[in-house]
Image: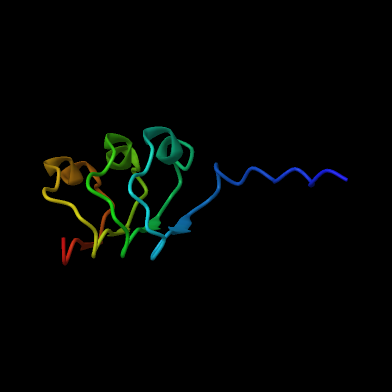
Length: 91
């Protein structure tokens, strides 16, 4: 018996938490699929860079990319006008 199809929540998803998953990258396309995202938690992974599509998430209010492997942080973060909390510690 096949698995039931997953409902596509991407247009209404507002919180996404991928802490502690050993992620090495996030695809440009993945973030384009969640335009209403308000909270994005990516701490304790192995990210070395952030995709440009992240900076088009106009509803984003919290971004946590702490405890990764980021060597620099894009000034494009200033495009996130709703951003109220940014954690980039321990990179």
